[in-house]
Structures are given as C-alpha cells and as structure tokens.
Image (cartoon, rainbow, N blue to C red; front, side):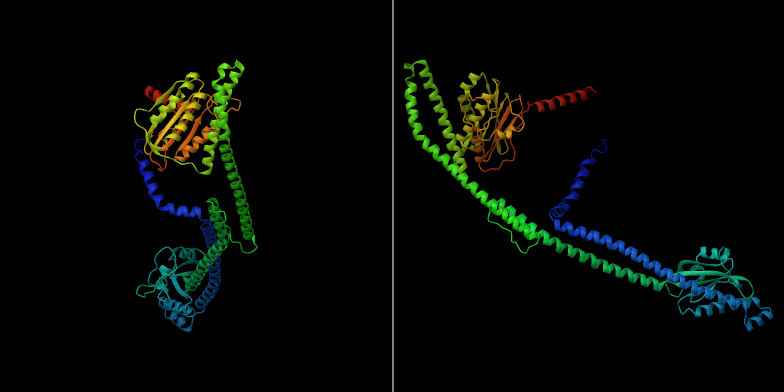
Length: 571
C-alpha cells in the first residue's frame, strides 16, 4: 500500500498532461453535432468499403487461382503424357545408343532434350524441371537420372518444395502446390510466386524420375494488384463522397438549428425583435415559422406583463404616496387621543392604545411598500461608505434588547474582537440585520440568539443563529417571498409587515451580496448576510458556512469522526 501511494499523484499528473491537449478537441466534438454525424458516416462507410473490398479481393483471388490451377493441370497433364510417350517409344538415335551399351549417357541426354522440348512449348508461360527418383528424402546427385535439371535457369531443388517431392515419390498421380520459382545465382532474377505440378514418370531405360511443371503467377498477381488498387481508389472516392454528402445533408438541418439557438440566446438576452429567416415550405421552414410565432407571442406576453408590472408599481407608489397625507392627519388625531387616554374609561383608553399601535404598523407597512416600489422601479440607490459592521451589530442589538428581555432571550455576539470593515450603505445593512435579529428573537422560543461576524479574502459576513422552531425542507428559499409565512396561524407579536425579508434580500443584492437561509425542523435556523469588502467586487465565497457547526448533520459527522479516531487509537 505504501509502495503504491507515490504512484497515485504521478499517475494523475500523467493523465492530466495527456488530457490537457485533448480537451479542445473533446469540447469541439461534444458541441458540434455536424462533426459527429460526418465522422460517424465516414467510419461506417469506411467499414463497409473495407468489408466489401476484402470480399471482392478474396473472390477475385480465388477465381484467378482456380482458373490458373485448371489451366495448369490441363497443360501439365498433356506434358506428362508427351514425356511418357517419348520414354515408351524412343527415337532411332536413342535405340542405336542403347545397342552400343551407352544407356547412361543416352538417358541423361534424353532427359536434357526432354526438358528443353517440353519447356519450348511454354513460351515463358511455364518452366519444366526434372529430378531423379528419391530426391524427396536426399539431395540429388549429378550423375545419371539422379541429376536435377530445369529450363530457364530455374533452380529445381530450391523451386520444388520438399513436401511436394515426398508426395510425388511415395504416391502415384499428379500433385500440386504453391511455391516460388527461384533462379540460379548470376541470373539477376528475383523469386516469383508459382504453381508447381509434379508426377512420377519413367525414362527410356524404365527408371523412375520426377517431372515438374512450374507455372508463374506473375500475371495473376498483377491482376490482383490492379483489382486492389482499383478497389482502394474507388473506396477512398466513395468514403469522401459519402462524407461530403453527409456534411451537406447535415448542414441543411444543423444550420437552421444553430440559427434558432443563436436567436433564442438573443431573445433570452432581451432582444425580443429577433426572428428566424424562413425560406421554402419544408419541415425546417415550418420549424422556423413556429419559432417565429412563438417568439412573437412571447414578446407580446412579455410586453403585457411589463405594462402590467409598470401599472402595478405605479399604483402601489401612487397609493402609498396618497395615503401619507390622510395618515399624517389620522396620526395627529390619534396622538391627541392617545395622550388624553388617562381621562377615558378603561375600554376607550384601551381602544386609544390599539389605535396607536395599529397606526405604527400601518406606517411601517406604508414605508415598506414605498421601499418595495423603489426596488421594483429600479430607483433604489446605494450610498456606500467604509463601515465597521461591529458598530452596526451593536446598534441593532441595543434596539432589540427590549424584545429579547420580553422573550427571555439572550443575544450573544461572536467574532467581534477584530474590525470587520466593508464598503456598504449603513442604513440598509442596519435594516437587514435588524430584521434578522428581530425574527431570530421572535421565533427563537426563548433560547439564545448568536450573532457571528467574520471576514476573509474579499468578503465579510454576519450570521444570525437561533434555536427555535427552524425551517422545514424547501422553506429556506420561500422565506424571502413577499408576505410569506411558515405558519399562517402564527401571530406576529412585533407587528411585522411580511415584507421585511423581501426588502432585506433586495438590500443585499443592491450591495452585490448574498442573503441566504438555512434551517432544520426543531433545530433552529441561520440567516447569513455576505457582502463584498469593496463595492462592485464580485463574491467568490463567504467566510461563514451557511450550515452551522452545531447542526444535527454536523454533530453526527463529528461524533462519527471521534468514534473512528477512538477506535483507531484503541487498535
């Protein structure tokens, strides 16, 4: 295990070095459907051409060899018959030599004459070789009929395979095999493939000898090479042609799709007047018409929604502004009544207190509606300046202390030993943190609320942790919706408007930051505000994890790790 450990990083390094130059090609392969289709067409057509070429070449080769064997056997059979006939009916000179007891010389001369005579009828179509009997087991001698002789400077012993010689020596009949014609040294000729046909015969003295016909396969080889070149040329042409056809066909389909993709991207970027160019009446044209109709309907719907949104924002803004004048009058009258409540009977005095409280809530709701309308209209401005978030947190906690004492909650601050500086709008940041702390106290079930500050890299963060009812799965994102409640039956003791978190998340986005929530049922929740240290600096992370260290999942993992370490130490 230890020996293989150093190889792991080295292997990964080698894999990365190999993959790095291939990444651009892989990226192009994944993104270009036209390239994939053309490549697949080329590969499949190449496979078909190769298979077809092998079949055709095999059939042509078999046909050429079969024809050559048939012609060779016919030619050899005639030559064998002529040779045997000459041995059975010697000429007058041969008979005279036999009478003078010159049989050995006459047999050798007769054999040379026979080989030359048989080879002369071939006109380079074949060569003739003669070997003495028994040369399948031992080298031939140079005396008598044991001597090897051949026409056309052919080396008979090297050209006739040993297996064929053994077959001719031990059996009767005609035998054939494929071999090479090898020529004697000094001729300058190279070996060439040939078909060798042999048979055991007897000479003029009745002694056995082996006669062989060697048929060169040069013409067949040239014909086969010509077929191979023709098939290869035709195959290359067919593969290129099929690739070009596939490229043209796929281009006709892919080009409109790419055009539609580009127009869809521009539509998503807000350029709603983009349309596809439609030509013809085929399926692609119908696709373009449907796409253009969809884009037109989408543009109409978006314009309708934008107009409706503008009307709604203007209505909210106008109503909010129009309500301020009567609200000011009602507030003045309510303050007079509230100040004189000591002279009223208990029921009327209580009504005066309720009136003042509800007016406070109405004013808060009206202020939140005005703020929301400014966010919706894009009129919210950011007045950023360098601030220490510790000062903002202290002001927020001081304002929330009365509610915390009423709830029996203690607010603890962590991470405030070092300055936490960021360029931010102090009014908006204070509003966000006040909302988070008040919500944590209200929903914390009387348990501690922990406010944690941290800074790292180019980001600062403030997290507010409570241990109350928590959030159910899926509620961490819905909690920022306007007028959303986790429990509609639960009353707000602080008179909240239901817009606080919606305004808070808009304030965070205005800073270029994040406002995120985490929670588990019965385990409390944590809201984290992350802001860039410098205005307009993009965020890459937060110095505080969204899920707190004391969550159930983290506690279980910590317990499992501790148990594993204890077991390892005990072992």
